[in-house]
Image 1 (cartoon, rainbow, N blue to C red):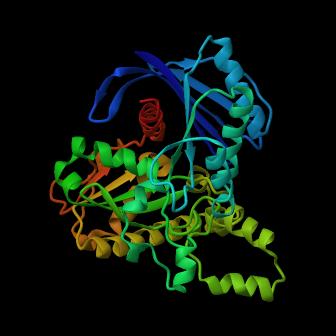
Image 2 (image 1 turned 60 degrees about the vertical axis):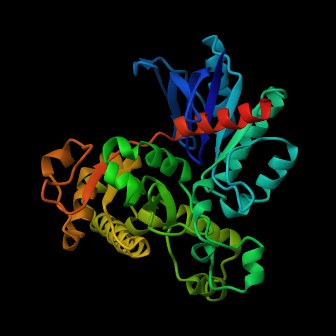
Length: 397
């Protein structure tokens, strides 16, 4: 039996999408046979939106113009699909935060929507956009099944001790704990790692998801042991506009000495910090790398330093290290950033092959490197499709 699925990855400044044809009769090891029909994104939603789309063979297709705003972007995408005669029977959504209750993808209904709405304060940069897409589709197609796939779910394998903060236990029981994010990307890497490096797949690996949002995750035999992000998507290493780990005393100081309220602090930490805040130039690594401004280099150096320090922390949690994997926009495309990170890990015996690194791998470690280093493109949309199908099919059965 054939069906089609629309995948939506709705972010704060972009809407990524994919349409797959699915043969439901082909289910091997809980994975369905997927054929890409369309894949693309609508980027720069708050400035000059850009619609780009490719067919299943990777050929660029003509795309429409659109106006700013997440809602109009989704409307434009749906109109584009309908104009092409493209229908869909199921929608899978990336939802950043699933809280303590959602450890796997779930078919969306009114109680689920209400529960996810309660988590908006934990991911204010992403969750509202994820839920807006679900709500708009529910209004337009009330009988269309939709599945929420969670970035936090992959890390529910973390031990209770790993998830705890040194706060009163009552707060832990109320859900103030380390969740971890980018789980859909890490799920994909975990699933394909054995195709590149069986030793890494069976052993201790640190995956560096480096994009506008960035984090690191420690894998032991493909299972999340711990990650750099915690209660919110602010934690860990600096990102495009997010600060990364911060002494909570800074927030108290901003409240008391600077008279800032919660909204102003939220805007500062989520939208005005990170690479943008340090450099004063941009949060885009491509812009910073091409800039001659001294603070652009400071921002890059801080980004690299904090990543290297986080690798040391995760390596200690793992009790060793067999491989490093770079993925996501910066991880997959910025060879100079990978080179700088690996150079500062030289003491581990890790060595980079300069030519392989410039050509983006997949293996970029030198022959004499004690630790293998890989560049593996992630595919969150494929994972969303697989998880959505599994959730919807399980309910249908």
